[in-house]
Image 1 (tube, rainbow, N blue to C red):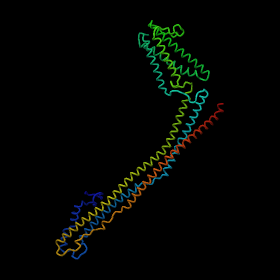
Image 2 (cartoon, rainbow, N blue to C red):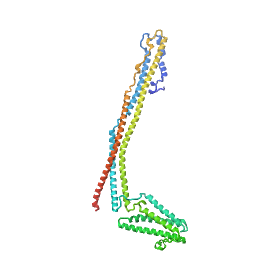
Image 3 (cartoon, rainbow, N blue to C red):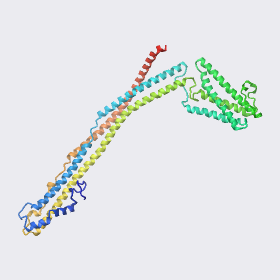
Image 4 (cartoon, rainbow, N blue to C red):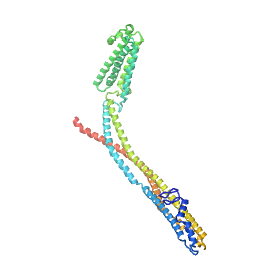
Length: 487
């Protein structure tokens, strides 16, 4: 075993600067000159035959072994003390469930106060939006919350552009004989016609058809006028385009004549299929664009003028209100979840500390066993030294050796329990009990706080209802205060 300034746990205890057992036997043999002193004493017939106590050399050997035992015991005691102090330091503390509940309640109150104003404002905004929307619907004889539209401007715009391009490409093939440039020339004219056709269709649906069903007569008349204007223009455009396609069959240099609408005898006076197809595709594209402009499931506005504006405001207010409710609910849940998570993490750390405490206790038991083994080994070495001394002394003396030379002391007092682990084991038992109690308290606390969480959320719903009533009352007061000014 290598030299060390400390007792090495798990091996034979040896004080600092002393080697293993064989080396120690030889070292003590040389230091105390056991053989020389035994021969010198034996030649003098010492110790005397009648002596009953060991002579000075034997007492020195016994004293040095006793010193070894004392040193080993002290070093082992220091290591036991280190472990006792470490156990005291990391022993689990009592779980204070009252503090945990207070922390949860404080967090819940804080979160409620934090989100109450946002919730109240969201209720008020939603209530105003509902009142405005329902007032508009009642005034215009619409069903409650009946606005239908697609809330996707990008998709709707893309579809309108796709319709215009599709008509332009189709018309370009039909009109490719119009100019010397062929398909390119036809495409230029077709693109302009397609864009104009789609724009008139969207305008017819967006401005004309939506106003046709308006409750107010003036707006209905405006809708009739816009519808007549755009549909007449579109009809004239399609007649002119069909007439042009018929004309270029006979005259490639023919020009488009928009006044053909004033010449009924030329309407549909076609001698081939392409003009009919060109007219039909144009009308179909116009109607599709008009439906997109009218809205509903086809577009981004509601069929009734102004209905979608108030409905969008209502939907936005409803979304804000739902977000406020979810924020409050999530904040309350987090107040419970975070505190429970903190306690679980604390208990997990205590379990890890308990594992370390068990390791420290096992190491202490090992130290105690190793110390006992070391003392037994030292007693064995002492017997060797005494036997060497007595055998050499007996070999050279002329008188009988003392009777005690035949017996060797057992040194039972050295074998007694030199390390008291009762304090350490009491600390370990107390830590085990405390950890078990904390685990039980944590389980009870989690069960109780889960029930409390459900109860708090139910109470929160009542709070939300109360906030809604408060917001309605406040809006009523605001309306009453604003009524004289409006008058």
